[in-house]
Image (cartoon, rainbow, N blue to C red; front, top):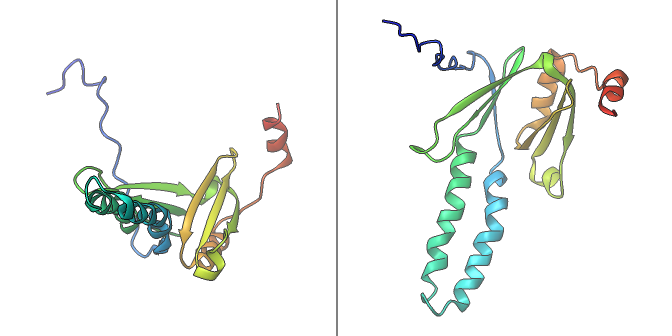
Length: 171
């Protein structure tokens, strides 16, 4: 039975599914370790000087800081088909639902790999994708980044940023 208000509540968006045969790529372990390390080390140092809780509070806070980063890393998957990039991500189970986003290769204009301070040594790269509308997507800590970029280059026409596009954005 449809009510008069049915057009005010549109149906939920269609669930995006990753096609069979898509290549899966994951982030390096460093995606959660490096951002957490500073805070965990700081809490360890503070535990040496924590006289109020006898050093227990920093050890309780350390997993609270590291766990969400670990869960986000564990549930992040980049999948590549012959025409699209699929990003599946989730955070804390129960609180955050897993979501999959689809980015068509047709919307991409340019791609570059950056390594940062430790990337080349530790075997990960940050892939920056620039879209035709000049938006930027940063995919950080990607393992097997060479295979990832080669796949996109083989299936996508990456024309680069056109001068016309540059002129439109200088206004």
